[in-house]
Length: 228
Picture 1 (cartoon, rainbow, N blue to C red):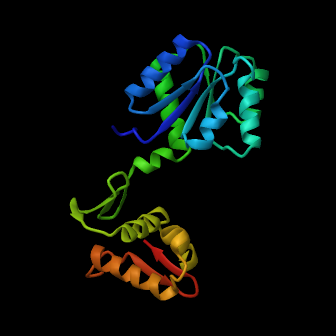
Picture 2 (picture 1 turned 90 degrees about the vertical axis):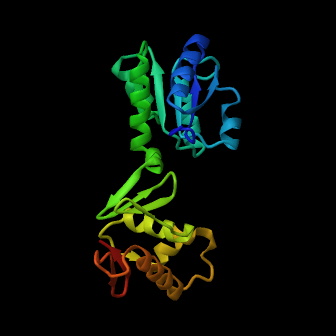
């Protein structure tokens, strides 16, 4: 399913509500892990990398916003939606100050749940990984890692795809070769000199615009390249 690579953690001490949330999120294709308290959650986060957390404020042991404030201090920046029956402004302010990103007031509908989850995933950039990006006659599918030119699939290597994705993310922006090395080659960029970057760009250009009809690539003197 479309959302199967997105994992969501739910911390809710009322078992029937937890099961209901798990059911509706699973129906949307998300992978869901539920906890009835904050116990063992931090250990789980050390081993997994969830995209979102739904956290009840009224939890046994450690109150939900205190737990999130603790996680923020520990360096976790996972987006959080608080679930709460508290609706006073001071309660909302306290939750946001602790590191919450959104609120859902109990009782809430399954539709509101899925819409708020999707909205926060979009704002946090998670759903960008599942998007298609279009520019002129190009369309890249980030899930399938495929390029289509006027609806015809064009074969790219992983390196070429990552290079094109980077350029299409930063349209009309001058990108340095150092930036491209970090973004495209990542930790394997040792030994990748300026000439290697130029060669990779030329190979990509020859695949996506061999006659230079679209005029995608523009050298920027003393900087690098711009894609437009």
